Image 1: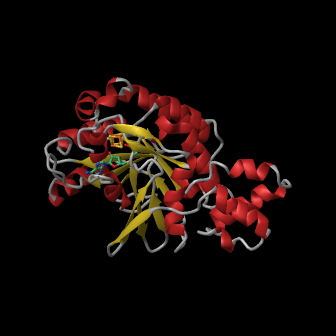
Image 2: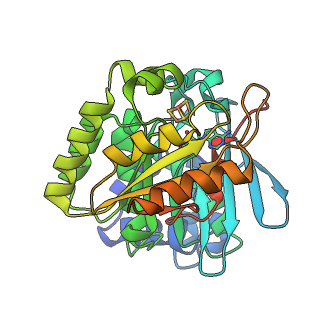
Amino acid sequence: MNLKNLNKIIEKEPAFRKKQIEKLIYQDAIDNWDKATVLSLKLREELKKETSLEIKAEIFESKETKKALITLEDRYQIETVLMKHDDRTTVCVSSQVGCALGCKFCATGKLGLKRNLEVEEILEQVLVFKRKEKVNNIVFMGMGEPFLNYDNVLKATKILNSENAFNIGARHISISTVGITEGIEKLSNENLQVNLAISLHAPNNNLRTKIMPVSQKYSLENVLKAINEYIKKTNRKVMFEYTLIKGVNDSIENAKELAKIMRHPLYMVNLIKYNDTEEFKAPTTEKIKNFKNYLEKVGINVTERYRFGGDIHAACGQLCLKK
Ligand code: SAH
Ligand code: SF4
């Protein structure tokens, strides 16, 4: 999709045209300007010449999920996943091509950062599915760190939320971050009801730094401070994602330490079974059960499914392993 020249065209039009075209692209999800019959033929021809609604994507389908491999204008590729649940259909979107933060267990981290995604590149990941079926839940859990592309992620979020565009309720949009504190603070001032999720994955800074080098700069202590400020301002729940990795963070000792820092009425812990890679494996089902039982026993809010997005999480964490 290429909408770089769109503003230039809209500028010459009466004011309502902008909304009309936004609705056509994002709400009606047209894939061809010929379908925009509410516009004059002349305008349609101009839009055809100056912009493109084409999304270059290959779709792979399995029973519950669909994956789209999108090729961007500069040939970089991003993956996006759609997952169906009884009550909702979730799309997991990427915010960057690759990621700079190099978490040890993450396939995206191995790619390094190529570049930030533009607003329309974030949105076309949703459109590619919306053109064929209903989408009503979004998680920013694909490739990249959303808060290191804050402005574009927020602009995209507002369009996803806009009644004239995707019309997806803010409560059905979740942003996952490793804990970029500046981003957490900014989000708390946006007056948006989106969900915030923190990729925690370790109960202390020492272990966390080993598997998530970003913890050197954004220590666990400072991340939790930022979260508490966020909660004070917004009074919203925060989801802590804890991916259980065999022999790394899955012991009862780890659970005990985790319980100590997760004791807060608005903290939710979400345990995720690691999706095996060459280097790391998931713990046994029994080990996961014990970990969860311990947390429950001591009164921590814990789930084993991603509340905001079903079990899409694991699939997201695996995006774009291959070229
Ligand atoms: N960069 C942001 C957004 C990506 S979310 C963040 O890290 O929060 C993707 C989630 O999938 C992260 O919580 C990540 O830790 C997790 N993840 C990565 N690889 C995974 C794997 N193999 N199995 C399960 N979860 C994984
Ligand atoms: Fe980047 Fe998130 Fe993967 Fe870490 S887990 S490397 S922050 S995408």
